[in-house]
Image 1 (cartoon, helix red, strand yellow):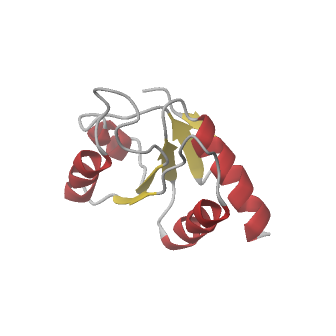
Image 2: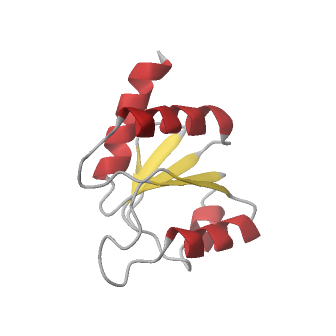
Length: 112
């Protein structure tokens, strides 16, 4: 797992596994946002499986998938809501971390 901090409240990584959620918790993250659609590639852990473990550990989690069509206004608005509602620090993940970075940057423009 390669976690890259964007700032004090938000970091990004590529796909995480159910087992890595324990490490995410140990690193102090209080919430997770998954920006990857389910079944994007074979063998990818489902959001539901990651969410079960996160919730068992007391980590809040939300699914805001960014698909092949890229960012949507609705997705960016959902990300703004997640940033306002969920505790920090937050980890966003997708396949590589690029979509999680892009949606965060767009949400910051809306947050003002």
